[in-house]
Amino acid sequence: MGAVAIEEPVKTAKLNKQRVRDGVATAVRISRQVFAATKQGKVLVSLGLVVVLLASSIGVVVSAHENRELFNTLSQLQSERDGYQSEWSQLLLEQSALSAHGRVENLAAERFNMVVPGRQDIVLVPLMSPVAGR
Image (cartoon, rainbow, N blue to C red; front, side, top):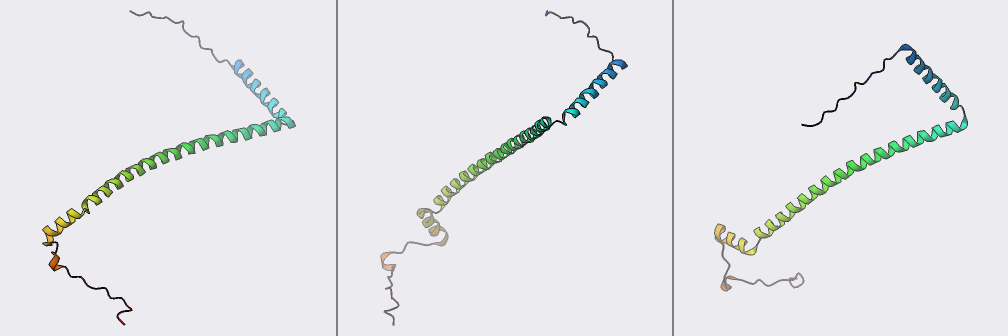
């Protein structure tokens, strides 16, 4: 059987009115000091730089997010392109198989009762040039 640890009960601090008043007074005093410090030139420059830093960091986060989205879209499109490339290769193979001369000749003979003409059935027609005809 495993060991069991028995912990001491934790005492919760009770909030009394005096401690709350002291905390609020401290917060007010610190906020007055901060507002008084903002009247100095160096503090204003520092606050301005902090604002610029925050804006820049938010821009970096937004840019990184857009970059990830665009990369995911690119990956999907490349996958789709590869699928189309594969389909195109299959269609080219099918086209070359269907347009083979032997297959076309067999289909012409079966469906249309066509035959290859013999030598005696071939007639050569002389070419007449437009100048010779005048």
